[in-house]
Image (cartoon, rainbow, N blue to C red; front, side, top):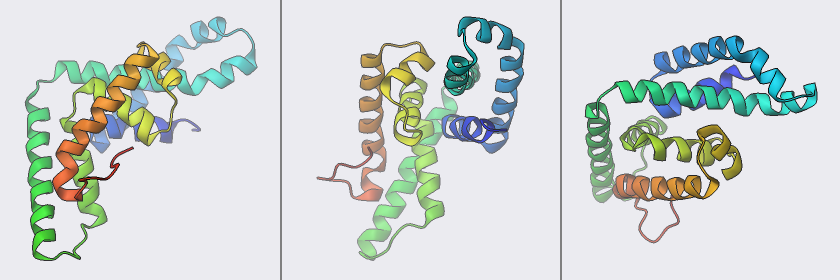
Length: 179
C-alpha cells in the first residue's frame, strides 16, 4: 500500500497508459513477493532492507516496463512523436494568434505524455526518475544497472530531446526549460 502509488506513477510516466501502469504495478508486487526471501537475505538487517525496499521495487517496475517496450515495435514511439509535434504546433499557432493564450492543464499533460512517449526508453526512464521522481543519479544507476555518469548523460539527452519537441509549444528559446 505504501509503494503502490509511486510505482504506478512511475509506470504511467514510462508507459503512458493508465491500464498498463496498473498492470505493471501489480506485476511488480507479484515479482517482488516471489523474490522477497532473496531480497531480505541480501540486505542483512531489517533497517537496511526497509531503506532499500522502495528502490528495489522501482527497479523491478522499470525492468517490467523495459521488457514490455522491447516486445513492442517502434511504431508507437513514432506515433507519439507525431502527436507531440502536432500538439506543440497547435499550441504555438494559438499563441501566435492570441499571445496571452495559455494551454490548458489537460493539453499540457497530453503534450508532455506524448513527448515522453516519443523518447527512447533509456532516456525516458532516466528523465522520469530524475526530473519527475527526484531520485539522485546514484539511485537511478542502481535501479537501471547503469553507471551514474551514463545516467547523467541520459538525463541530459532526454532534456534536450524534450526541448526540441516541446519548444514550439512552450516558447522555450533562451529559457532553461525542462529541468
